[in-house]
Length: 394
Ligand SMILES: NC(=O)c1ccc[n+]([C@@H]2O[C@H](COP(=O)([O-])OP(=O)(O)OC[C@H]3O[C@@H](n4cnc5c(N)ncnc54)[C@H](O)[C@@H]3O)[C@@H](O)[C@H]2O)c1
Image (cartoon, rainbow, N blue to C red):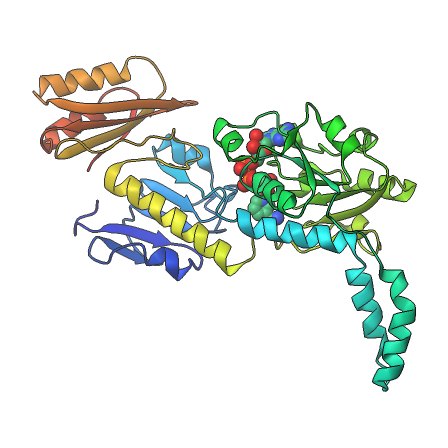
């Protein structure tokens, strides 16, 4: 904590007021211009190339992706980086519903057609014409159709639940499903062994996997060969997951019926069988608020208690407080560091009440509760232990 005993939060970008209101004014100073910040709160501001202040211990992104943050650089300084996974899941789920409906009914073509009738001035005449022409805009119902969901995490599981509520049959594929996500999943979702069988058995397929190396062009010319004829592909995940050229080829061959996505690419434009939205999946006021509130809460819990939830570089750690002081430190994940720190504590006759040590990749993070606030000499001694990166007393 900085000198005037308030935590200092520097905000980049406009952060939803609901999120900012989480910080009590008596414990926090929150501003876009701030010196010696304890934490950053940001959305899409790029931190690459910016010097990391010595006082900084946390960065929280109100959003899911963190490619605007050089995470490794921040890890090497012991700065925890948070994101807000799932905070925009409902927003994306609702747009997927719109996508499914737009793909099933002649909504956009019908609306476009109606706009061509401006020369007709008589309502009766217009109504008569529309009754004659509406057959061109007929479609199908979602009820009874099969939706394949690829990736059953925060968004995929909500989409699966929504589809079941619409009376759809739902197939799911997720080889890396977490236990937590599995618990969340409705039991009616039929788990598929592989992507091929999901594609082969679905009328609609909705993608909800992260854009990582393993999912790059997951949907490509080869996988599309397994697609059921007339399948509608829905992608509100990321552009890199789908090979757009392969999709165009499959649409041209008549195998894929439609591609509905949040990621327009030149090869997709001007086609009646493509509906492309301008990456608006998470663009709702509610999603922005949810992200800001989640980011603020996570930062506060870290600053006040050292707990870590939804970090992309630190292990998840949550420990109820015991005693009147808490020491936290991060270190390179090599053996012996915690032992050395504990012997420093023993040398200073500090009694440890509770402790927790977790690691993630090259980094380890520790919480140690002690009886009384340690003297500054002790903190310096812990900092001096080889491989210790950052020490805090809270
Ligand atoms: N359109 C938008 O504006 C928008 C907004 C938010 C999120 N997204 C994107 O939506 C996607 C899903 O987000 P989320 O919050 O649900 O993520 P999540 O991490 O909660 O879930 C992703 C799921 O995908 C699974 N998975 C990983 N690799 C897989 C593979 N090869 N095959 C099948 N499943 C696999 C994981 O096990 C996990 O269950 C992400 O790509 C995210 O970037 C898009």
